[in-house]
Length: 248
Image (cartoon, rainbow, N blue to C red; front, side, top):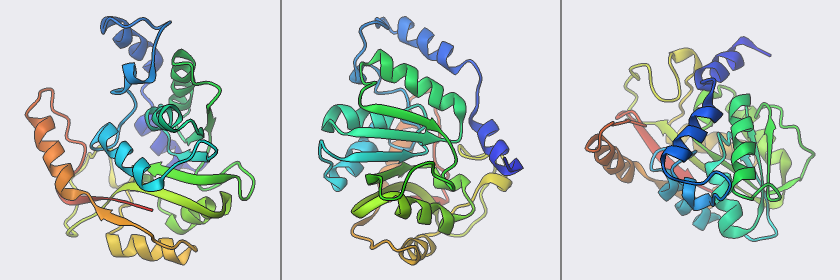
């Protein structure tokens, strides 16, 4: 595995994450043997605006129960649990961080969603799936760590069925000013690869996608950051010189 991938995985790997989450569940007064997806909504939505953003993107996709969804960069499974619960579709999550996949599997079992959720440890640049396997490819805040965007989106295009949809909710470059590291997705510049809106759109279209919907969510994101900052402990989840866009 290339050293860059190891650096990305080490950035996200915490060690003992499953134990920490189980402790938090118990301390919140919840019964680990009787959990629902809504009980742990706050767990696993690492992207800016959390569940609110996931719900908005899902509404754009118009998911159906029969859809097979691939979540690239699934983290510990917050969005995939939501999609499986709300739409009844089957979701396969893939992440470069093995610890995240392990925790996602645990939480799927605890919430009774193991029949609708599958998690794979793997590389988004070499998706371990056959051509035309999925109706929807879904990704939230994952591509910022990936330098080879043409390869990434070509792989997503490959595994989509004809007429399938790619749903992206991502941090993109803003006014061109340099980032001040660390940022939430990278401790150092060597694993941060933001594209501006024009370049992102060009890469998507260059790999065979037709952009159906494109929305700039920067204002909503800035409001979310202000609310987070006013509610200690504050966690700024986006840099002021970045923009967030969602699109299909």
